[in-house]
Length: 297
Image (cartoon, rainbow, N blue to C red; front, side, top):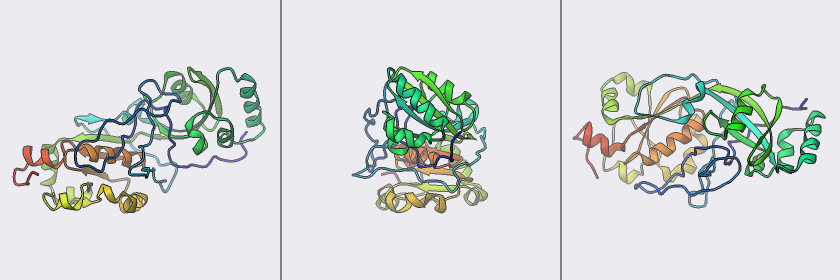
């Protein structure tokens, strides 16, 4: 039995996942593909969960007001749906430690220490060979389809807060499910769909509209109702995002061509926003396909 409930740090960097929140780019052009990174539990290509450094800074998840948000899974038809809506909508908050396959004596010792009351997160810092050890083994919220099968099966069948073991090609894992919630929604929305919604005055009052382009871009073309949160100024608004915006409301994100906004949309989803929509093709496609009165640049 554990002596205390584990802490809930931000989502950790790990290759357990098969998907990734892409690296955010400060350029108005589409960013290059992210490089392969950590090599813990993922199947090829390996990726970190978190974005790589942005000009010397990492885009770090912001700790939500509650570490156990209960999210509703809404069925909305759109052209794109993220992996986080899979797995019957379940998301698990998981921490783990990883040791080498032949370290059976260490495995037994760790199990005994956990039974005696030691915390898995403390043991992860001390013994884990996964990069997530830097965050006490915290992997963040995971869903079906993001992990190698053996780990996924163990996590999604594990009793809440009970430490269980499983073996993958990477070695032995001791894992613990700390919380469970229904999955959030991340979808593309086409320009004509958004244009139709924009004609309804209630939509502008009920939804949250976010433009992540830079001020000089917004000066060239803009849409009414969008709050400008420039990506280059992420350091000023990122840490306060859950106070600036309501995680319960539908949130629509836009940029020039839809690449930066998609990356920000995925980051917002990781912060606990329940329903996030990315404008496919950005304001450029909106101007071309939905509203020619909007200038292109």
